[in-house]
Length: 133
Image (cartoon, rainbow, N blue to C red; front, side, top):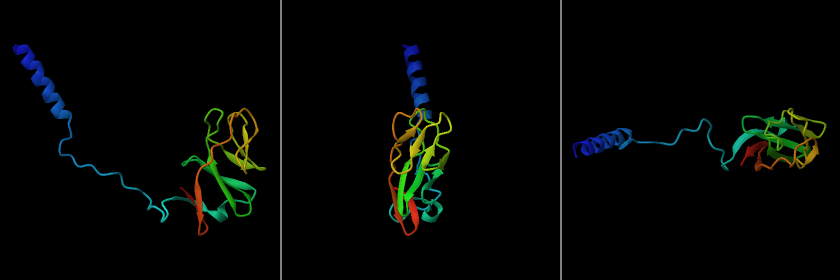
């Protein structure tokens, strides 16, 4: 009986030591203030060339402007093996790993081993700025 009491007491003491009873927690502070419509600012519209695009590797997003004033956003992660796309040129978004190419208008596969288009990402264009929704 003493052994059982000792084991029970030890287990309870260990659990009590692991608990955070009374510890106050707060959500992590954001490094950037939220945009007025809840989106995260990515870039200015003037920074995305017509017929081209701009890659945001940290956000894993590529923004394109196939025609003047028509902005699109897609995942920057290739659907073949998960590499991040590296360039936008000649009307395609290009993956450096195995040569997949995606059309800037709809991210459909133009060439390479990628099995699917890049998924669309929601953006908002407001006041000359592109926001990631």
